[in-house]
Length: 78
Image (tube, rainbow, N blue to C red; front, side):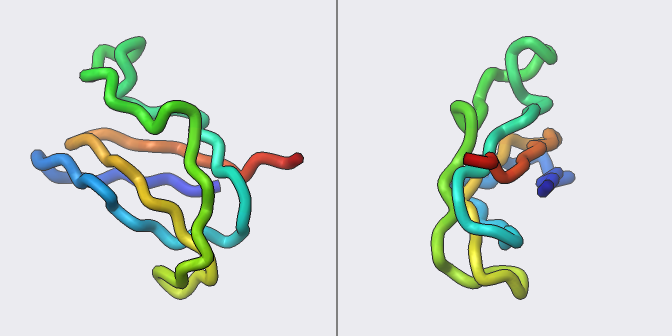
């Protein structure tokens, strides 16, 4: 699992985060979702990992991070 929680007032478009495994990373929750009173900007269900090393990991995902929110992801088992 991966949690991205930027503590900033600015959105972070195309923010890359290293992940420990390849595959589809399912969005479990996004505190900016409309159901939580946020703006409704989410990842649309998840993101595909890229074979690009980041944060000491072989794989990474590119996220659209809203300000003052938290995004929770887990790799989907297929």
